[in-house]
Length: 109
Image 1 (tube, one colour):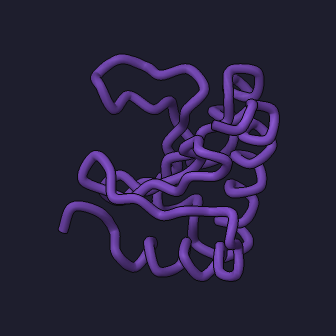
Image 2: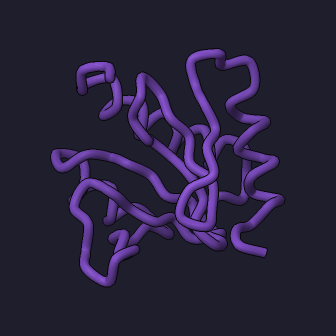
């Protein structure tokens, strides 16, 4: 299993009905695009959240969050949330909302 498929099903459920969001397989996991930009996804068992550089320091201080280091180097503006931080749909929706705040600040592609 390249990514947590149960988390994928739960993420899809939280995004259900959003015609402005596209799911894509990327990096051995799945990513979701809004307005042409990746904003959230799953890498192995972690939720990947694009919070942007201005929200980054606050986001990594939240419980169960850490800096994303997909390439082996920290990626400012992206965080990983471990499974303890995605236990409920409310948890997942909180991360979705945070990611969409940054996404909406960028011009559409």
